[in-house]
Length: 517
Image (tube, rainbow, N blue to C red; front, side, top):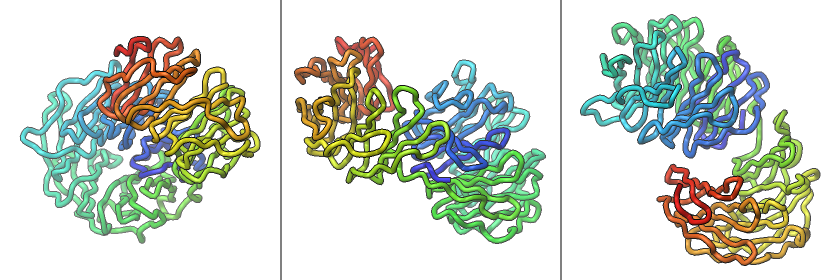
């Protein structure tokens, strides 16, 4: 199954086995039909960095995601809008796991801590769990079935057991030659724990006393990234950086059959369907594949959905269509309900398509590209309307349409914002006027609700507001962010501005004074 544009780091099944959730280095979470491999809806976005881990609540209604943006996000009733965001750690969130009661979540991070969160209020429960005098980081987590113990896998090659009541480490299991990359909570009967390592080995421990009871199991030729038990506990499935999946007898440690091949890059994660009939794998080759866990035979073919996606936007009136711009220089339009490609690929640009917006009536599409041009298209036929609109001297980051649909603004790496009259330039396009901004690429632009002002976010960490008619700077530079400003949005009444930045923050501003709110 193809759709992500970078490494697939985590795969989780829905409780009924009909759907899959996947998380990727492309900052998104995706939702798939496990029978057809079709994408369900659009990518879930919100994280600003790699999404490393997913965990489904015990009742199956909530999905938690942990990211290298240091946050955990919660998605309720499986909708693509995060319900709650917790700034959980001071570094990458590497692992997350729900408690059996569903009311708490445990997280671990490269900031060397394990933390428990109360999901009623989003507050941390008690102190952070940290090993005194330790210089390492946590890579994986598990919670015991009774919710009284947490198990962690560490970069120092040790499994630790933490008491949930006291937040203290009560046991350490060492003896590993390689960093622990993953841990699986238990065998189905809860008596064993399996771990995968970068010394290419798999190990199985007795949960009660911590003794190594099987392994090291040898067979992979590179890091072991994921380990999964069969439903009856008789087998283990493992995934590796060597691009293969292997199956093992959990009593003897003997390999069952040959390695399963098909992925063309690292296999990062595995997940077994609730009925045990399918094994899903996620890889750095941007694909999700299904396998028959008994035979190791691939189930179905990976689906091709085009190349890396830079931008997606819903049709304006009914939201039934989704337009996307890609790094293969194409534009595509999808049916939102079915996920089918209904128009395209539309060809015309000679560089990445970085911005796509609809006309107000949904009859046209405006697109901007790294080829420095803006193009206009019929949204029903995909036919180009007129010639490319030229004027920018470098690639174009962003487009914004005025509320009345009569003006189009474009922001470019050439440090300018240009205004175009959409009614007068249906064929060849003529710039209404150009704003020469100060140093700092223009990353994002947005018209005010009344269409008289344009706000812009820049690489120089500033926000600026311009008069649309004259092009004059009327507010700013507004200072406050400590890194590139990548997104700017007005409140509905025009009294405030919201901005997002690479400094990991969102800020609110008074649009008349520029004061932070």
